[in-house]
Length: 445
Image (cartoon, rainbow, N blue to C red; front, side):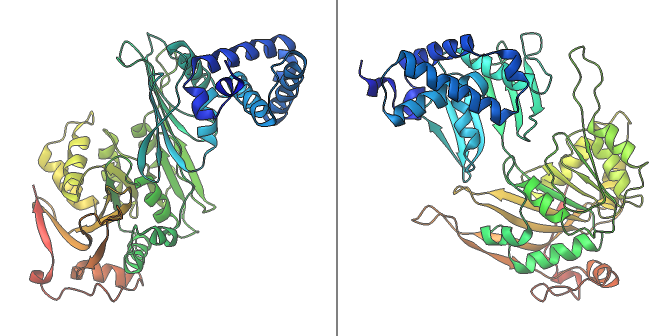
C-alpha cells in the first residue's frame, strides 16, 4: 500500500479503513508516552501543542517516512482523535458550517449557506461514533446509554447537541450539532435580503412602542437570529429577562438577566422547565420578557404576562404561517396543567398578541420575513389578521436563486395611534388606513 493511499486528504482519510487503523495505532503509541495527570493540568491549547510535539517525535523515531503535508495531516488526525472529536473536529472549526448531522457512522451531512450536503467522511464503526458522542455529552456532565438513549444539551462553546441512540434509533447512533451564528443586526439582515428598510423602521417602532411580538417560522428559518436582532432595539434603560432551553440569545444591553432551563439529572430529578422560569421571571420586576421558544404549557404563562402589564415581550413559536402561529399558541396554552376552556384561551391571545412576524426558508437557502401581520381582533371575536407587509416570491431563477419584492399595506388606525403616542414614526411606505375596507385582513379560526 502506497503512502498516498495511507495519508491523503481529510475527506479520503475518513472513508478508508486503513487510515482509521493508522490513526488508532499512533493514538495508542501517543497515549503510552504521555503523562495523563500532567496533561490534565494544562490549558486546552497547551495540551494540544504538547501532544503534537510528542507525536512528532514518535513519527520521527518509528516512521513511516512522510512528506511534510502527510505528516501534518497524520498528526492532526491523531491529536483530534485523542483530544477532540476526531473527524468532526475540522467541521466544528469551519465557520461556514451551521449544522452537523451524523446519521450513523457512514452518513455525515452538514448545512452550509442554508443547503444540506453529504460529506465523504465516515466513522470506522458504531463504537468509534459512540466514543465521540460520550466524549461530547461528558463535557456537560450527561450520560447516554440504553436507559437514557436521548440527550439534548449545550456545549461549553455554545453549540447545541442532540443525541439519540439505539434502540430508539434504527440507524445507529445519531448526533446533531447545531452551531449558533454570531448575532446579526437588522441592518446586516437587510444585506442578506431578509427584510428591507421600511420593514426595519416599522419593526423598530413596534418594538420600542412595546408591542407584544411573536416570531413564527419552521425549523431553520432564522427565528432566533431575528429575535436577537429585534431585541437589540429594546432601550438600554430597560430590565430584560431572557428565558431559553439552550442559551442562544446574545443581547448587548447592560441590564440583561439570562435564564436557562435545566434537564433532569441522572436520577431523573432537578428538572427546571421554561414554564418554571417564566413564572419566576414575573417576580423579578422585568420591563421585557424574551422567551427563546414557547413549546408547551409555558405559553399560557407567557400570554398572561403579555396581557397583564408586561408589554413589549418577545417570543418565537414553530409555525408555518401567521394563522398557524395563533392556533399553535392556543394549543400549547391548553397543554398547561390549568384547565382553561378554548374560548378563554382565544380571548387571552386576542388580548396578549399584537404582532406576528412570519419567516420562511426558501429553496435556495435564503431566509426572509414573508409577512408581518397585526392581530386586529378583540375579546371573543374570531382572530383577524391585518397584513402590513409581505414578500412576494417569484419562481426560482436560472441561477438557482429565489427573487421577489416586498409589498406594504396601510396600518390600522389603532396601531398608528399607539405608535404616535410612543413617539414612533410610521414609515411612509405603509401609511394609515382611513377605513376598515382599506385593510388587508383575513380571519383565522
